[in-house]
Amino acid sequence: MDILKKTIRVLIADDHEILRDGIVSVLSAVEEIQVAGEADSGDMAVAMFEKLRPDVTILDLKMPGMNGIEAIKAIRCIDSDARVLALTTYQGDVLAREVMLAGASGYLLKRGMHNELVDAVMNIANGFKHISVDVAVDLGMHVDSALLSKRELEVLDLVSDGNSNKKISAMLGVSEETIKTHVKTILAKMRAKDRTHAVAIALRRGMLQV
Image (cartoon, rainbow, N blue to C red):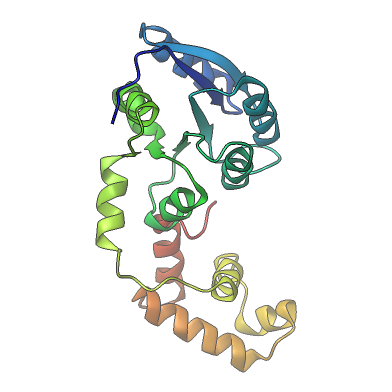
């Protein structure tokens, strides 16, 4: 694979100005990297990508309007070769898997940004993947874990809000027995001791977000 010799143009998308300033500061210190633009929402990131066509887009997964995964898919629709580095506080393997399947080239935890950011941008610009080590370990640990269905995730989300089976059944328009079955399946798939344990696991793995 040919290594890029040109300047790497980067678009930064994050709704926190202080964090954007920090990213700009880190990247601007590298001669081979140029910050081409900044966006503060998913919609703005997509619009600016179409206009600027950067080599790498650094995209926060949690922004106003269009969420990060939707933005990644939209950017990849504009350019199927687009290289996106997802930036997040969420370490969970489920979210990381979803983000990479959406077309991201990398998944970087914000807590490791200052140590890994430049290497991540360089790797992605040169056609490689970059995943934070802690996330890669989680992906490896759960590679054979059963994933929850869309309905099971919906039920678990309602469970996390403290709703009873009876209330969830009314909210979803199904029988209470059906909800009990879903909960039993969720606990089995997640190897959870009880509902509270299942919610804790789901938050840690990125199935649910606060």
